[in-house]
Structures are given as C-alpha cells and as structure tokens.
Image (cartoon, rainbow, N blue to C red; front, side, top):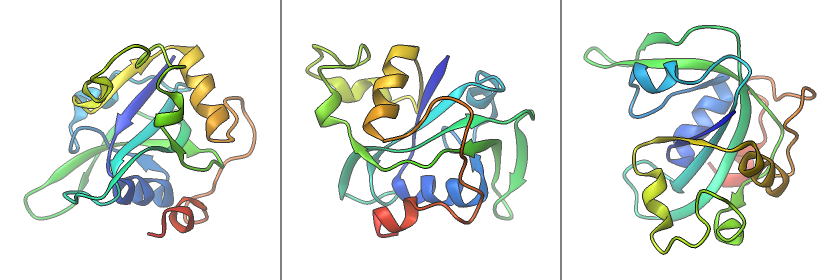
Length: 157
C-alpha cells in the first residue's frame, strides 16, 4: 500500500532532513491510517508554504518506520503529529509527465482535486510509476540519513 501526502516543498525538505513526515497541518488521524512499512510519497504543489510559486512535483519518497505517530511541540500554541520515515534517495519528478499514466489522475481534467485533502491512498502500480520517475527504489535498500538528503539542494531550498 502507498500514500501521497500533500505539502509544500519547504515543509517536505524539513521532514526529509529530520527523518519524519507530517500530514494535514499536523493532524494525528491521517498519519494513523498509514502502517509501518508502507510507502509515503510527498507531492508538493508549491515551493514554499503560502507561496504562489507552483512546483507540482513529487518531492520525496520513503517508508514509514516502526513507530506510532507522536506529538511534537512546534510553538507555544501548536503541537503537530509526526511519523518517522526512512526517506530514499530520489529526485523531484513533475506530475505533468505522469498525469496520463497514473490511475489517480488518468482522464481527469481536474486532477489536482485528488490532493486537496492532504493525504490520498494510491495503488502499488501508481507508487511504482512515481518511484521510477523519481529514480527511487520501492524495495529495502539505501536510505537518506537525516540531515544528509539531497532534496534540499535539488529544490534550491
């Protein structure tokens, strides 16, 4: 099983650096749907949270580690839920080249609607197509240790 989480590229980059993922502005319930060992793919519609610069690319791919989601205090008034992820080496891949190949978007004029809820379950076939476009592996193998991921440089963040 695989999941796509929607987040700006700058937020994804922080998660890759820290070895975690957050979903839906830090909500707990979406992360509880994802099980240990499942694939998580980050889709970034924009480069910077709240910004207008479109990216519309898959920006990270990894596997959920064996640990329940946990809460992190991000400010005096905001606590977010996170899950730990073994991020795989990859490169960003534009969604535009994949629109007709993915079951999730094929034949849909308003393909972006699939990402508006912040998390969506996808087929293993779609995960494989996305992983190939990102030059990433879906099987156990090399991972990006926290703080050593190349995504930041690729995105210029």
